[in-house]
Image (cartoon, rainbow, N blue to C red; front, side, top):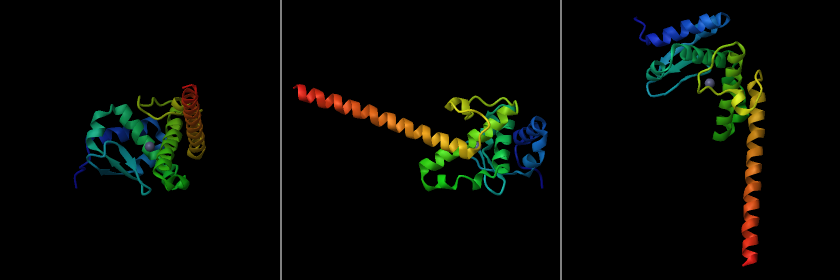
Amino acid sequence: MPNQHPLELSVARLRAQVKMPYLVHQVMALVPVARPGLATLCVDRHWRLYYDPVFLVKRTPDDAAFIVLHEALHCYLNHCQRLPESHNSPAGLELGNVAKDLAVNSMLVLSRLAAPEDAVLPSKYGFRDGLSCEEYYDLLLRKKQQEEHAQNHAEGDQDQGEDQEEHEQ
Ligand SMILES: [Zn+2]
């Protein structure tokens, strides 16, 4: 049976192996599954790599290789099974996904790979590199709570200001 996957995917996987030779087994273990319209790449717990052919063509070969390594690391680090507490709500799930992306991208950047411009990186959140997804999840939760607290305070101050105005009238 001919290989029905696009050349860009083969190039990305080969380039990924050159960039991180010690991840050859993980990259080769990924089972590609075309998902037109997905607009990204992602994996499941069975090491299936879902990809949108259009998305792949739009990325540079280096970015595509980085993304393939990103997905391979999600599988290698067993991310599908981790942070089960984040699965309780859509907001938690979103935070959990960011935490996992931070952990993976941090590892790749620490390995001296250039991240795509739109990559989710710890530095963009004011976090340090090299933490686990659980540690990033805790940091993200704390950051979110601090932002909500600050917003409540700001709204409280505004209410007080409005109350004062009413008293003055
Ligand atoms: Zn990811």
